[in-house]
Image (cartoon, rainbow, N blue to C red; front, top):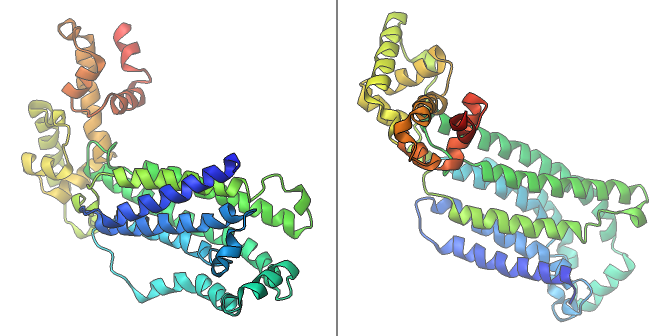
Length: 369
């Protein structure tokens, strides 16, 4: 058994294991876990033809021949549905969702006559291509990458919108943002690109020159996706959109200029005197309650009057506080992490990123000057 076969086998085994774990655990984000569990299991099943290739397993299990092919059309829609489930309070199933299954259903219907044949007929068809199954692969080669890229765009927009909501509501987002989803979108994009290149070369008669062989690169990327999205999804905290109050459109909330100015003055005064930003889990809702400024008005004056989101608004105060302590001899015995936590940051990495953003220097560089 060569190294590629071992990698594929490990991906299949671990994928099914992760999938069933995600289906069985009970957490607040249970719906998202179930969708992810199904997605990981389907990814694992799609890998089996690459493992069976070059073995006699299909002779022992002929009913599995071609069964993985239609499932490819389910992966991208399920990934998008997972992202939507992950970023929403509730997902109501709508009839329109069935339209996402059309490519899968059409492909299954096309293959039904093949599935109903006995083992000998299946092997003869695959060898002689008398059924035209090989011809349909040209269409599949074109359709799959197009579908992948289309759903990736929708998934990226959904994740980006969610992260924007987080920055409007939370002061610390490193544990609850969806940057890891965007990493997996990149893997999906690479997979789609490989499939597109292979399709173009194959259709134009250059199958012997396909460097990015789909039988080598594609299964490795799928294995990486299984491990990446599986384990990161399993470790994702339970704080999702249930903690984010979706903002109304500002035109529906009345806020006179004089009142906005008064709220802004009260907010600045409260931030400077009470220093609520040192609370590492400060949210817009918390600050609204503490400052006695209505939630939507508070959001509006931060976004419109200060032209910032809540995340940047709070972290700027934290950085200014950190700068004072880094230069104060009384805090020389504090480590960088100690100062970061003292001003409200949850981690040194988040502190370094924010500090660099507002000062163009790392905390260590700033302190040593």
